[in-house]
Length: 441
Image (cartoon, rainbow, N blue to C red; front, side):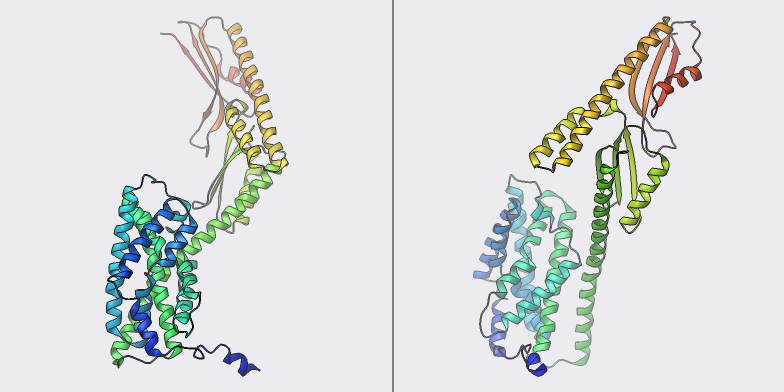
């Protein structure tokens, strides 16, 4: 039973004649005529698809693109020691690459739609997963190419490996002067090219296709060194980027869980949050007085534990008078339009109600303080009571502050600032008090 099972995995059972395989590979290396025009048309189609964020259009461009032909030829040529084919394939690939880049750049210079869409941005940060896609896609492609019967594998490989979009994205980067897009897209194309060729080489060796010429051992060693260097030089940056992506995803997940717990905590009223996954920082904007330092440290430790590494949790506090009621109202409308669960809508409504009540109370208290100070210090020519923020050298974030300014007439004895500040602090617990007293000159 086991021998029968092993025979079912034998790739040489329905393999084409080696000469037929060689002719099929050489056909993909031709740079003049049909292949060149099809490439230009495919680049325009892919650029339009990226520009309007249409996945279907991008897939169509990938299906008709001839870019994969010379890449497969490089791997095949290395596998059968056909160095003349490798040289032609590199020349064709360089020509195809330059034409693709020029065509995409021209399109993105002319199009009025300059905004980078999600389909385009997805081609700017390649990772280890792109390496795996290119490797297995290339393996599937050469297996299909060496079969007697045609199949739908090759179109699927063209879609999976996605050679066209990175070149179009690189053209967008040149046209818009965004070199980070240009570099990221070219790196993704390099990953695809290197690992499609590498997997093709391995499958050709597994199939034991006949060598096209005899090769000296020293040449063989240099070729292996060159191939190994290219593979590892392409692989290592993508491995780091994949690790960084995993760290960011862990942090986003942890930040989401902590935010859910914070919203459910009756002691905490979250007005807004900002997640910076790259810097591993979550910033919470809370309503009301500052949390106890012990609670802040517990939340910080909980976030670091859930995110599996170092994480920063920053707090910003807003008093009732500092809450933007119009923003809360707009967010509530967006929640209703988005059809969020009732508990989320109820929470946002509660925030708006609290903000409105707090704003009214704080405004009333400021008016009362203003009237009291005017009655107590009739010699004052100007009294100001306002809400603000203050950040001292020891503060990590700005703190809510009640600002009281008083300008007295010339030669008027100023009140004791410490007593007045203590009295105001008792009226406004949870806020700092900044007292400014001056005399007219």
